[in-house]
Length: 102
Image 1: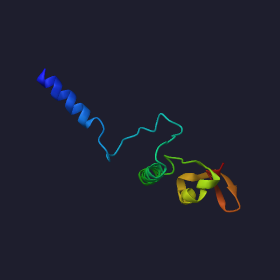
Image 2: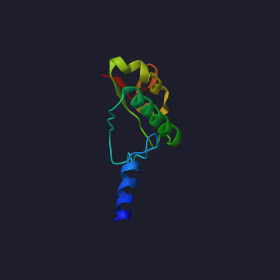
Image 3: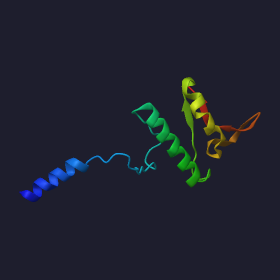
Image 4: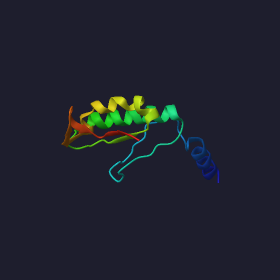
């Protein structure tokens, strides 16, 4: 009984450990939706996008963004990632980028 009580107390105390990194397997998902505190989510999404772009080549990873008009300035930087290029389609500036405003 004492061990069971200690185990339950331990689980309650450490069930949620704040400020820890997380691992996501994105292979099973075609899109990801994030909800929560807006600033923290935006910072986390920016970090995930940067890590994806750094650790995966544009041949291995394509990125596409549908951004609302209100958030366009916050995500304007993603247009420079080669992972957003759509090589098959061209416009006046070169390959079309997979970044659109909704």
